[in-house]
Length: 256
Ligand code: 6PG
Image (cartoon, rainbow, N blue to C red):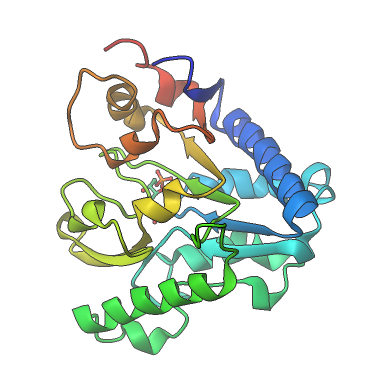
């Protein structure tokens, strides 16, 4: 670990989620002030629910002009939008249904349940292609013509995956497409995910990682000794990247 890592270690999941919510509101306010809008890609999984709960509290909620917020997804499971495993459903239930973000500003990856009905590679590729096109149409482009999120929110799995960038999968080497499909053997399931290039060119990255089961890999992510394949490691030394950890997840940092 070195001074460049922007790591915030908090006593509990709640404290880490609150610190991440503070950072989220800062990013949103700055983007709305300087660029007139806040384009944010949300993470899936369960940990973000804690952060969403804070964003709904008056002390956070009242500091955001939600009409300027544009919502995207870092990755998605190839299930219907009302399926219990859907990241879209999770975000809808834990945030979107409780704040005034215009429906036109919400961009689900699976925008037509029919598309996923046959789970064929062709259909999944079409979903990835459609989402890449949507991002290209609605996201601001910088002077180099690159699309840029104001903030991408990410988590980490106990294997070191982030978004749906899983160890040993082809999507890790994707250097042209902004969105790609990936078949995750160990899940026996397709996923669609933002790729490293678009995650790296965002103005800011927020990683919220909590739980003892993440401690082993997190310690390896922040050490150069372990050459293991932990996709999240790409963000370990990246500037404009803020990590929010609870004590349990951080319990082995500096051991290795
Ligand atoms: C997903 C996420 C994934 C998640 C990690 C951590 O769709 O599952 O994008 O990358 O962030 O799996 O998940 P937990 O927060 O549930 O531990």
